[in-house]
Image 1 (cartoon, rainbow, N blue to C red):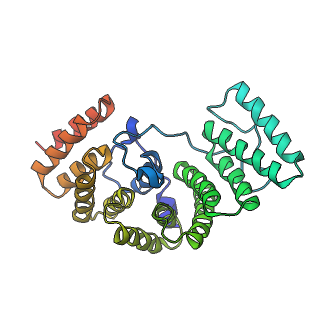
Image 2: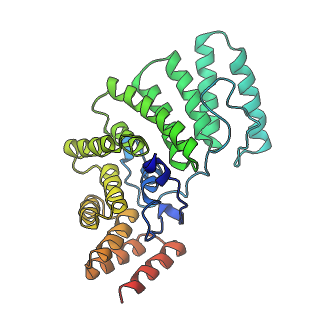
Image 3: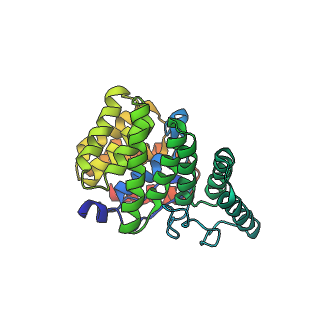
Length: 297
């Protein structure tokens, strides 16, 4: 419970996926989960985008674990009137569908539409319906990824526990069918950090790196977790390895600067901050870099 509660802290979220570090450590674990998804996610990109999107708003309203849960009336902050109308139409169509294939087809459309309005909890529910009708690792991972995205942006202990549990359940099923799916294993590891067994999460992330030492998501997540536990030397090691793999990873360069500064390696910190600043035109990032550089004088 203490670790779960530690994930609830507020975040200074800067555009392009950079999170301004604080002296406290409560904010950083959940940022790792957020960035794992925002910076590409999926096996095709392996979290390698230099710039990330600003990400969705928190998925805080409307349960997604029962058929009567998702409704178009829930507060979709990004939904237009036309999108809400389409959601209502598809929800009615889904409720009345009796042929399994048609029901799965409608569930897929609903999941995609909920993703479009940044309601990943509801998207996860409908992808789960597709997986029930058409079992297989791909359908299960779509559902798991949507719940993980919702978990990453949940802002209450109840939502973190609920959505993290759903993500763990579904990723475990994915890995039972595809044990070499490192993307699923990485996200499962981060989902375990909000459980009663966070050690299992670290174990899974280390297993990913044992199989793929260049895995950017696992390197980043372990770096953030090391920061969270004030193990800055270990964090520097992870971020150094990450920038070797992908020098254009803004998050890695920025946090390499932060953690190098914490360990007294000021020249290395300055170089990393300069690299991060050169990779993005974001004024908020530039301001954070200048603030961190001022601390080194």
